[in-house]
Image 1 (cartoon, one colour):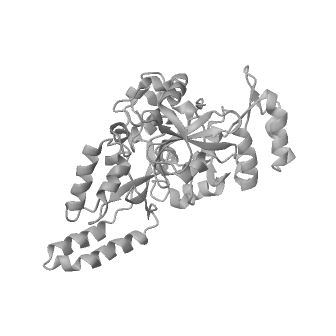
Image 2: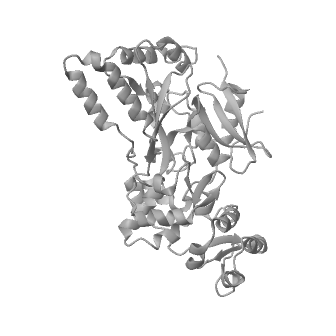
Image 3: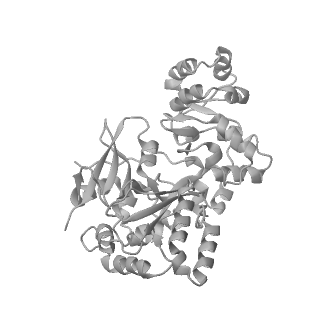
Length: 434
């Protein structure tokens, strides 16, 4: 049975309307570059007897990589030797500049039907009774005709909250879609906020503020107090700069190393699925890299199908909204092997039909091109999907919105985003042989 599709709420969803009028630029990739080492290698290679120095240069390169925490190698396998480097993407400046800056006063939106339960959550989180009464008093709480109540927690109280209290309260707020910064918080995966924002343009004091206000969401750190952060910015330009940094996401730049004597045909066979898929393009490219002195690797993106190669590390553009919706993870996966995107796959009903007709369920171990569906254990709905590439690497788009680029990520990091509640599972699907 094929999964039916749902999509998670997009980050900063109410702010996306204006962005549809923008042409997006390519993101700035922030990567650790071994510049000094490359200069040394070039100088050594230009000297007499450079061939004799080869082994020492190789050791220097390996040592430099081993000492860089942003670089690691995938486990060995038929996919070849993959060198992975963490990079950080932020939304294009033009897009950020067009966004309205969020209100600097924090508000919590709670349906009237859940107000009593929410007040009980506040008590469970050990919120002082006087703060609860202050927020829920008739003169403080605002109610609208749609049955929604808006509570305004005082900022000194928010700053003083413990991480545990923040986790309890914000997990409850995430159940109500109108709380956009809580349903889709900024996620900091596998690092401290200081490391995550190290190459951003934010002042250290603002990064420290974020660190103080983070809370646990499964195995990741989450940040939702955007309004509170904006109170510490000193100008509109700094507020936009901080907002841009909050769109940051971590991806992997992957390179295929092709050392002399390595098994080119085995690597070609893996990336062509053993079916000859793009073999005429992949084989000559890998062979030329192996045969060229000083060119030890090429980006993995060159081995991907045309559409994925075009989209990787970019953000959705204006023309992608012409059908009334932005491509999501399911569109991305079902179009992976297509030369041009099939736009009918934006329709969840037709996407489900495509899975039934073109794919078959499979169990691990997975292989290149398999779709990994993240399914609800209760309903069976697929709320996320990604493409398995090799080892622990997947190709993914995390959300149906303009702020979600196409990325390569570690599978475990994607699971931290989508399986943190413990109510989901992964099911693989493989393209049927024609």
